[in-house]
Image 1 (spheres, rainbow, N blue to C red):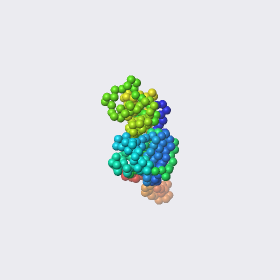
Image 2: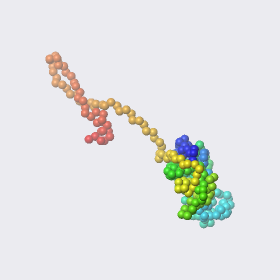
Image 3: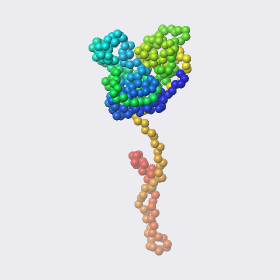
Length: 304
């Protein structure tokens, strides 16, 4: 796992966060194309993210096919019926392969999984693509910064495991000498079938038709438990979670001004006639007890 860098890098993270924040603030409709590894595109409507597509994560069609509700042949026939649409929603519902609610869930899962894949990779540049159209948009969009935070938290959860891995870095293999699969879960058995020392967690996600995040997390757990092996040693993954809102720099407080003495009515000394025993008329002001601190307490409503 040598050469692991900070998630997105500081520059890449700030670039993506700033671009998504601007899209949300301006209620942008269109695509935000992210170049990098693996990169992807965020589709927005009115400033909310309605779809994310990335070569680093399986799309909704792959997740739906993996669910077993429709076969590859049935899917190909639906695509032909719809005139080549990559996401034939009407046909899926009309033929009873999936309900509208099930398709919405698949689209939401694919959206969050693709956002995680982008966050876990590298970002080189972001540019708007106003004419971009999403493959499988969700009905209710996600606030862009909240979506970015969700991806960063998922990466933080993987980074906290004893053997953290990245979706496109480590290439695990089965232990030498085999492994007793009794007591293993379905996903664990599937991964053991496909690991060969050349496939990454991303490759395994496409191979099994599952989300890249759950596959990456399971690979990390299996490596920590000795169910998988990897030639590299684990290295901690630093994660930077996006802030809730715009960053506000803290200003240093200004130095306190010298203590002020509130003016009071002057107190007159006894008046003598001029020329009498050398004592002349004079005024001596009294020192006030309020001062600056007393004024500050009054302004803050804490004066006793």
